[in-house]
Image (cartoon, rainbow, N blue to C red; front, side, top):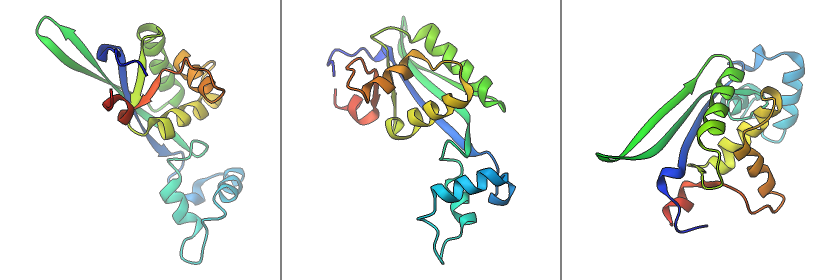
Length: 167
């Protein structure tokens, strides 16, 4: 990673998710079958499928939804450096994702811009990419690069907080 990374070019992000239904018995029949299949190895005499859904329903993109995307960016002004925060939230996940995509496409769209978040490589970005398949017409350019990284493309512009801290 480039040690000359400009802090003003980093967009820090975090997502918040909830289950699409709050209880397992509220899922439609197809979703129940899919959830049971995906979590079959966790079911035990001590843990029912209902308990597993309560724990995991919001963190599995197929059974959850994003309710908030918060971002932070550093800004260098005449008064010195400050931080700006913005949260995107909406009951309709597609609207929420389109608002976030607009921010990325309009303001964080060069090769010098970087996304950064705590555990976002393992959770936030994969969750949003999975949700993209259901909601977005096309993912933001940054997310396309995240997918390309798995294929060996070095234009990847997303880092975890630990990586940024090491700069």
